[in-house]
Length: 151
View: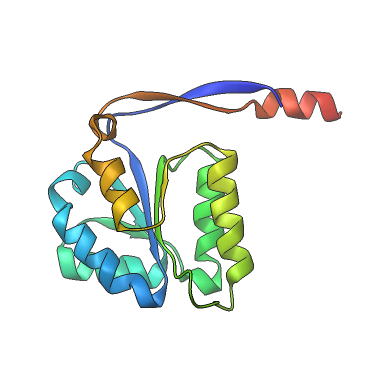
């Protein structure tokens, strides 16, 4: 597949997602990184976003609940270049009814080459990086070239 690039601005668009068993862990991480997070644009699936906003006071644009389609809404935003970083504290030990949506979200984040954190350690590494507050160019699929080859 042909590649092109896009530029992530210094103020990233960050999606925050967590399975029920990991919402408390994500909240703790958000509290610890609040000063950095407030410099960025934050999005979340419904229940997670409501809880995080209420507990931290951060401005978070919430989508609908993950099992009701929120994971797919975030995935669509990634495909549209509207999300730069995905923080997704998912539960690797318990299956959830919307597992196909979870896999699709992780897959689309990989397709569009955005940084993904699936736990506290990886989220901390991303947010402690100097790149989190800098303009960054990333390589992405050249969708126009892909379409022109298929037609």
